[in-house]
Image (cartoon, rainbow, N blue to C red; front, top):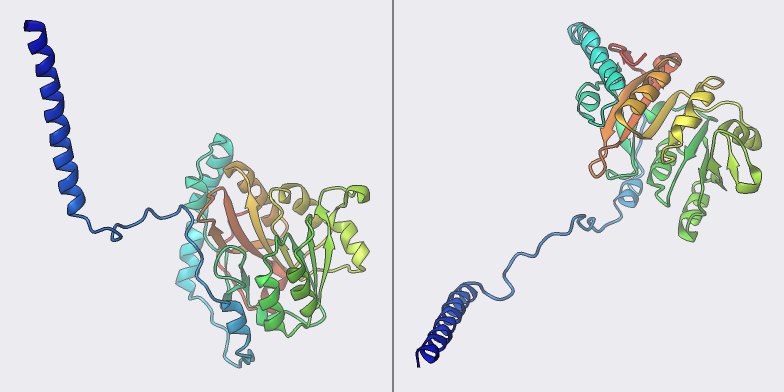
Length: 309
């Protein structure tokens, strides 16, 4: 009889507990209107709808200007120059420590030159590039675009700004989609399937920049745009030993120490950084824009302080 009572007590307690939980759940559920709860957002939100680039291009703007070039005040330049030793010291620490942290790298970057017409050309999202005074790009020049991934808004808007006065040669290791190829043909861009490499292997469609320039029959480059997923470390240094593009727009994919090494190597060839943009999704990626000192007058830039050398 005692055993039966104990079992009965356990059953009663279990029923009581379940009843309490049901009441609590029902009360909470009734306080929330069905369909009004906020859904959990995706990690990557959907981009806004609209062909913003086509809207800008359709305006057919007049890019001629007679306004004088803006110059930074002397006190601003002096302040930048005073900070050079500290910036160099922190970048030295990045290389010496081999740390995986990007704090000392990104926190100590600053423009080395002042560009009065710094523009974002192409999409305002990933794929667009910061370029200095594209209105001043000389006629009959050559532009190299390395890496597209079917994102060609930079090439499209640049051709619009320059009225197609330059030739663009575009390369990617993968064949572009048909609508991309049609759009590139419309703006007179020469396209070739090619993987950019330190050495040429035609069977595997790998080419050095030097050999690609020979294939295209060109010897000079005005604008060099690079997004080749890490191959920049092997491709850019040898190219700059022989050629001097006026501007370099490059996305770097590397560790902090690798990045500092490449930036300093570019800087040692007479290039000054005027823009940088950290990738919002992947912080090991960053866009950098450089201009060669021989092109300062052409693009109306003013030197501030050089620390990447």
